[in-house]
Length: 61
Image: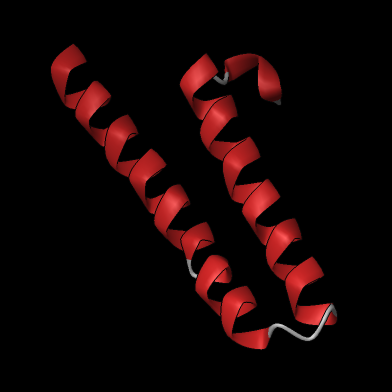
């Protein structure tokens, strides 16, 4: 599955995953506002990755 991922894809996936984990850690420590703020980063990072993929596909066409 990960054989088709580029280095950029892997970095974006890892950063989204780490922000999710960090958000959950903050939430269970009682810092709900900070956890929600960092949790919002996850779809933003993944959306940025999709945007980069679309730009790359348009350049290849």
